[in-house]
Image (tube, rainbow, N blue to C red):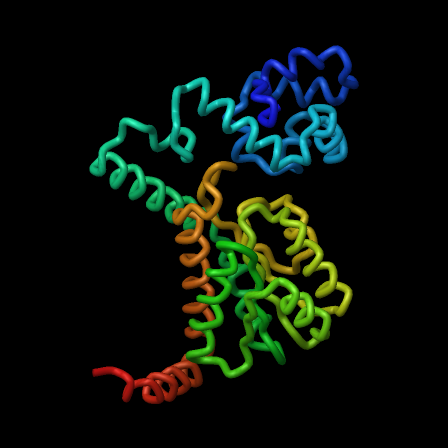
Amino acid sequence: MTKNNKDIFYSIRKLYDTFTKSEKKVADFIMQTPEKVLYTSITDLAEMCGVGDTTVFRFCKSLKLNGYQDLKMTLAQAIAGKEGKEDLIVGEINANDDVAAIAKKALAASVSALEETCGLIDPAAIKNASDLIAAAKQVHFFGMGSSGVTAMEAKQKFMRILPNVNYVSDSHMQLMAAALMDSADVAVVFSYSGSTKDIIELLKIIRKNGAKIICITKFAKSQIAGLSDVVLLCGSNEGPLQGGALSTTFAQLYLLDVLYLKYFVDHFEKSKENKAKTTEAISSKLL
């Protein structure tokens, strides 16, 4: 594996005869379409191969990998090596790109993410999310890593018109906040992959307490989507070597903006009044 500078394709071929029939389906799919795997969740890969999630995980263990994300990371590094790329953005940026090329590719990735997200918007889901926020005693925004930045922005955005919004960045404090939520509360959760262990643990606590959950994720069949009451899908293809890609953040922020504006329109007079109050409160800080 990568720790021993072994090519993952070589390892799959070497161990192929030791795989079970189901694991061979996963191996065949990876060998035939490796690039597609980079942008696929474990659940989606399992479905495309006609196997269960546990088979994919077992396949990873057979390759002495720590899990599915480790598989994607190793695969991405192998693809990058075969294509002679030294950069971290597989399939987009390469070592020979100048500033102009980098700028155009970054713009194209962001525009593509926004357009894809717009196409994925479900008006009924946005309306449901707005209604849940309106009925909530407390609204908690959650996110880890780069998604935590979006969650913090969500709190700052909604606190201009709502007094009952919360966000904490520390993962332990997020768990404590989740533990005290009840059926009158709503959680808005940001997670691109939908399969982050900390977020899944968080959502299980929230679900156990009976609070409603709105999630913003890339994968409709991810574990957090299955735990949520409302799922809002964002675009952007973020590979395993592109953690924290701004195109993904832009897609999440765009969905956040749509949700915020929908809530504002649904409660126009009160939102307008509160926005005026909060704007006036900070106006003296401007030169």
